[in-house]
Image 1: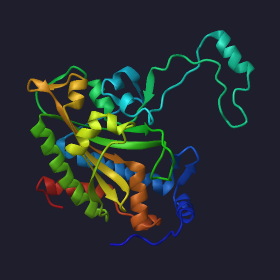
Image 2: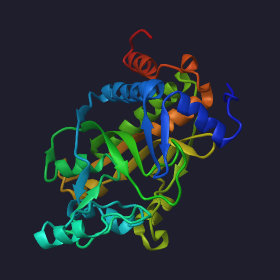
Image 3: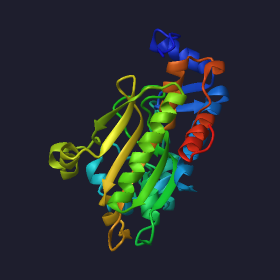
Length: 311
């Protein structure tokens, strides 16, 4: 199957997507409505269906994490260039008076801040961090499978509609367990995803990848990822990761004191950027909703086949 030849330029493509529900903001954020929003939600239902292969428990978490808790996993030292912080005005009356007596915002739209409260919260950089943090200190008597969806925030050098955003939606499926249990989870997940990709008409390639560390040469985790690949991305069109399979070994288990069989638990996850799925599906099938596949139905077929049921 070849890509739909509906847009010859980025401007044409943006116009076509606007007609089916995309509004793009210069801040690198997207508003979705109509057919495109329905496709977005259908994709998420598909990933929840896939999570049912492990009877994964779905959870809902806040938009922020305590900075101290996040740094237990080394996030801020590894990715300071991508972190987005929660800033609040110092509530002292004289500070609020100074704010109101000033311009509030300047001609360029920048807020004129006289004084801030201490910054203690970080906007969610990846959905799975909440799952580990919420279970700090737990002892697992069996493998634990979880799924969650969150809006994630990352500072980027540039933005591209539906491909690279400053805030985007991530669905993750996570396994906590022994090394064998997490490795088995990833094997099964990749097999299920390969079947799912075919059913929705996509043909991404699994490529080895590394995380975007700020000072990669100085970070032992980056060196480990180079020596022992633990991150693989399902890459559409040669350069767009629409899913990733990640093996963390005991990094999060040790950071959050999660134990399984007397040692720090291993963890692994598969992650999906929902806006990127909109890009891939509309790029492959065109902007006409009548030509779009039904991802949730495709995922139901994958689950039925995996469990030995009829497709």
